[in-house]
Image (tube, rainbow over all chains, first blue to last red; front, side):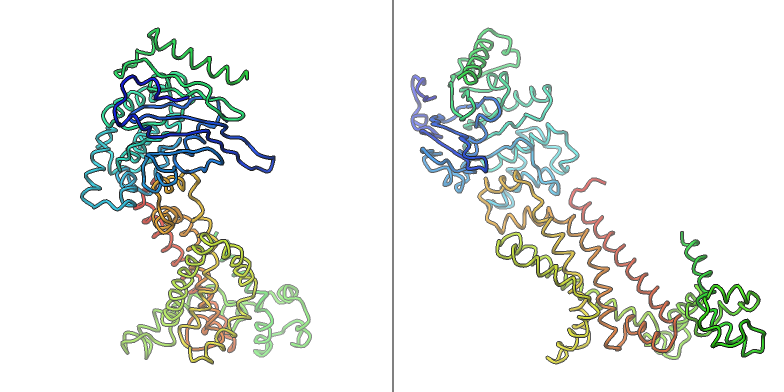
Length: 271
Length: 306
């Protein structure tokens, strides 16, 4: 199930995938016996791609993302991130992670929250200020640097948390249903902004969602997953152009991909 | 509320002091029923009040009442603070230093021990809580001992602490502060353990994605997150510190509100005891209010919603 296989003329960078999973297994030991969260998951994520993981709850998409982040340890198979093990990549701060909730520290201002990873990673004061200003600009929150999280709407908080993940310029951005708790109007806007951000920063993005339109709209690759045990049932490479206005969602191409995703999800259930 | 308490207090003064009042009336030649102190001794206070309604005028103005009336306590409070300092021979106006007969002086002594004990107790409490959160061994072993320590009556333990410390040459302020710290560390431990554990899994995961070491997690996440819990504990701890300092002063008799209370009860000076009690209560209220004020300021600086 290689995602990169369809790339006709791979750039030298894309030849080695940023994230490579091979026959990944993860079993949680619980009081009710073992739970197979992931079974035989193989996946290559090429550099600069936008990969969405979609599937019903319990299909292991968040678990897979956490494995990539080194927050969970697979019980079998191999996983490399930037050519290192996931845990080494975590130690090397290879990725920025955006959680389901913004999770901003309430005692820090927006600027202070974005500065947090920079302080921990030992950037100089001047560089901290410069980077905070730059990522705030990127997520269009420049005038909110001094505000505290409770003074911002949910969507703005989530944008601040994306800025926080971007601040230290990791090559990979891991996003775990970042817009799941937001209403659809805010979500549409943030989706557009995220695409622009991806275009400008050229980062590799792994994005967990359970919204089909969101996955199709955003992704260069859609990974359809199915539950019990969590596994990949389909990988779809999107033929949509990189330039995607919101109304691309009404085009036949878009609807066709959405269909294929839906079929994949249904097949996962029927097995 | 205050008026109701005062009314009950004034009323309670009558039966509490009726024996003394009737004894004085008998000595003054008034017809008292029943006529001798021996007969009156075993009678109920209210019965005596009922049988001698005309002789109770002195109830609120005895020299050494069992229960002084509020205005007597207020008078004593005034005499032993403002009056003593302004007009007393050794008051601050005449001699330039606080009188050792004044509650201001004794309150100051108690306050010093309270603050030192509070600082020691808080520091110890925070240190223990950090240990408990970071070490499984400490988590399992410290809490039971901390709870046991609080079940021992402090009045029983205080003299032991003073004697033991005296035998190794420590006396004065330190033993009182130790007793005070002994009472105040516990609420801080309990509150801080809860506070340090208050960050949720997501906030801790975020720190892991930054590969933050435990020290960084402590300073950047756990400690700031625990500040609201800390202040809740500090309000209890500062009041406990004051109690500890007063209890520590009881056996020593080298000044302080505790010493005043015990001296007053030795010599039947109940209004002196009550004045010291009210002084202690006022100090406690002031300390708790100060802590609350500091809490509001701190939380506002930490982005709290007004």
